[in-house]
Length: 186
Image 1: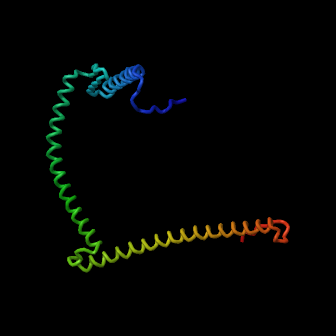
Image 2: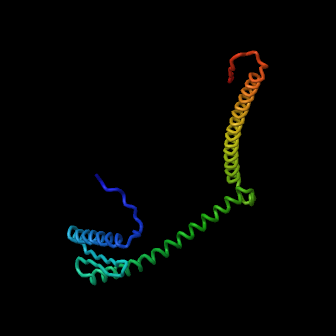
Image 3: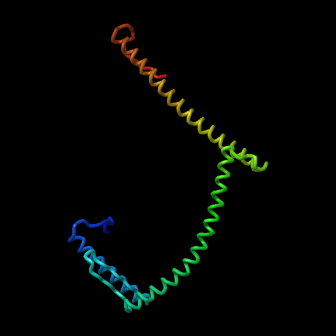
């Protein structure tokens, strides 16, 4: 039988929180040691408890791992900053063109600034408008049919209730010679 799923949220009870922290810290340390041994990796783990106490594990020395990390991080930042700057500049140019195209398309679709469009563009715009109009008409037709169906059902229900009411009144008033009451739906 397996365990139930644990909801990951802050534990309110401080003693339960401390016990959980201790157990999970031990498990994390054990996994770090196993990773270092099995994969011959340099592993450094730093944990600060809620009380500020430091817990750490290093497969070699923490100082050498931190120095290595800082050197790699500095090189990566220099490399990525230059690449990121160029990439973001290219992305900005592309987005600006795309935005201008969308503005042109929107103004054309609204019937503004049509004089600058070529015949092919006008034909394409006309086709798009016809397609949109067709879709709108189809949707409107479906909505009207659904509404008509609902109204028809409501009228039938209302007619049936009127017949029932009328037949019941006739039976009560004794106006109808019919003995048993029968309801005809259609």
